Amino acid sequence: MPKTVDYYFSSNSPWTYLGHQRLVDIAKRHGAHVNVKPIDLGRIFPVSGGLPLAKRAPQRQAYRLTELKRWRAFLGLPLTLQPRFFPVASDPAALLIIAADRKELNALALAGAIMRAVWAEERDIADAETLKAIAREQGRDAEALAAAAADPATKAAYDAYTAEALERGVFGVPTYATGDELFWGQDRLDFLDRALTA
Image 1 (cartoon, rainbow, N blue to C red):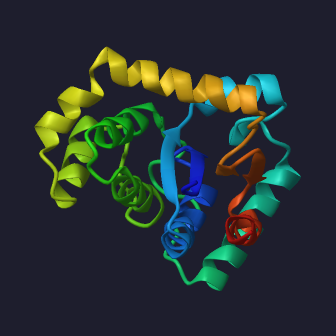
Image 2: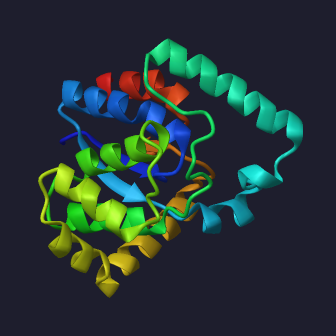
């Protein structure tokens, strides 16, 4: 059986950004296929006990910044701790990524570029023209991809991925799943690596 990883994520998550390329590298090393599944955290948090960043206790908000600094330094990745366009709605980006996936246009690469746009380039991924620009930078037909993102079938897939995530017990992003095992957080990628080795 080919190895697969279900990748539940949100493009506006710094933790997803920090783990993204490592996931790509791990999957490549194991010959695993990554099922790209953006999800709506606005529907996940209310049923899983999660809170949007602005509603978290000050101590948690402060420690989040500490951890982001640590991981940024450890991984050597560019990351703006408080980017200009954050918080930012992730639905438009999710739909574009799903549209790319449905067209078999390397949705993983597009997702990585969109995350970089938020966390390293301080671009507004809720803006349609910004998303088109990112798509063009990835060598895609931006207008065709935007039209596919507006297709009701793309929104239906987004809803289905979110419902699937809830059913599987996903409560935060990124979550990686292989077989029956869930791995929450980019700091669990070593465990995913081991699971794919087994």
